Image 1 (cartoon, helix red, strand yellow):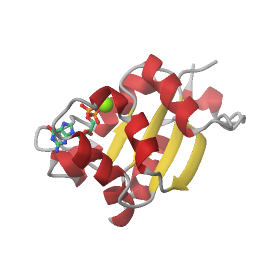
Image 2 (spheres, helix red, strand yellow):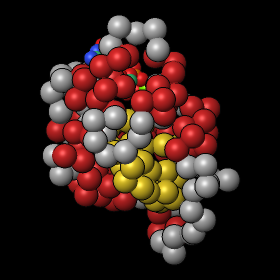
Image 3 (cartoon, helix red, strand yellow):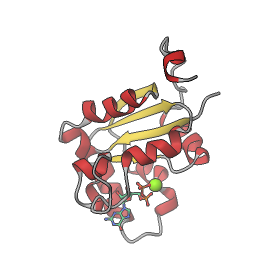
Image 4 (cartoon, helix red, strand yellow):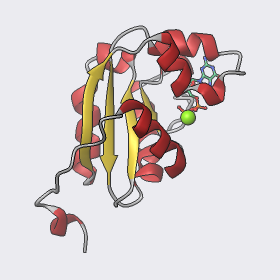
Length: 149
Ligand code: GDP
Ligand code: MG
């Protein structure tokens, strides 16, 4: 199966009307949308998603941020989508994110950095299973041979 990643537009991205812009960047790149839902998660779910960061001093604030409103949870598919997705997103701290990246163009504070993307294929598998227990959608784009040689 082609590589997949988990991408989440955080509550600030939804509130600020950045959903269409962000989806558009992944679409235009050539990645395929394989899962999409607007969902408000509860505290235990957010703590599970960020369980690797539970010892960090910002953990509680991070969980409060993620549960503060609906998020857009997505699965995107394509060659190298985990690493390239992280490049489209930009550095964790938006002050260090390059212009042209999502965080570089749309965010300032690290605690309001608009979007999440899986950091490895292994995390992507875990995060997709957590957010999409029903599994991603199964469809093939008819544009495939215009994007891949
Ligand atoms: P990411 O993979 O680039 O999202 O970064 P991490 O996995 O290291 O951290 C997860 C999220 O926690 C980040 O996207 C930020 O929203 C938040 N975060 C990370 N480091 C800090 C920090 O030093 N302070 C605050 N307030 N939030 C942070
Ligand atoms: Mg991370």
